[in-house]
Length: 396
Ligand code: SF4
Image 1 (cartoon, protein in one colour):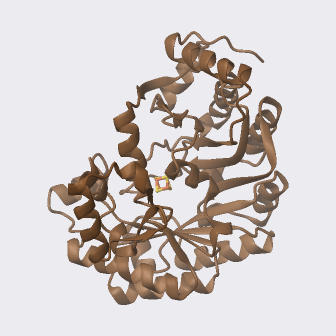
Image 2 (cartoon, helix red, strand yellow):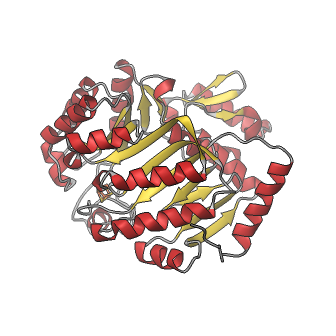
């Protein structure tokens, strides 16, 4: 299969730059590959990710992802992480990710020890599907547990119960997966410090290698966003949210989980989410599928959001571009700070462009326990994570 891009400027420029680097013998670190699977069985009221509830389009979507991948075979050559996210990738019949992985291995060099993650919902997994995914080389499951309290799950309108989530974990372990991440949500109306503690305790007993704990937020354009705006639902206030966050951090630290990113915890560096780490480290990644984002180190571009326009454009032999931006050096520096202050790797002192005023701010942040200095890096503490989005503003 070969597709001739008709997408003009952006693609050509990227291709030229890539060729120049090749000719100069520049050896790049491996990149990350994200595949957006835009299908769900139902829409959760708080979710702002793009998905449709019509699985009839799965074969068309998969064929389009193959076509899209072909466009990028000279711009991205090597990957050491692949992430099937969504949407609900666990809805896919195993032959679909199987076929896509085959295509990726043919078009690109995929490291033999690549981290290959599949996001899954508890109700979808069967012993057969798990064996199938494992057989394809998928070696990490990110399971959308969200809560181990049925009352919370009903509020979130999830399709599974707490008991089904526990069964799913058992099934995942039974199928031999050694790398499991659980997604949990706090700040759910009606949730208390005690009920959240119970969810955390039950989750820690399952000994996942990794946990992502997100605060429930009212995103614009979602059912929950509208309900909060019109007063139908109230979310916890700032103090309560801070308490949930610090409770989570200290509870998981006591259970041996390193709080290495604002919302992410791992049993040691070996279990950091290698794919997501590329986003936080400002490294290159390619995103395929509707609404997926890509980044080549300076330029970011994103695909058409809806499945319909994604399929249409690829059907016409065009890249399904939705938009692009090229970062100025100052924007790039700001992003490095924004992302750096969200992780335990922190920010290099040289990126803070220190002057007398900023030195004073830095000292105050250290004295207030928001950041600690480790050699030439400034590392946020859990209290610093709480204000991570505001920290870069002191250095702009
Ligand atoms: S939260 Fe997950 S399952 Fe629910 S609508 Fe969003 S992507 Fe689909």
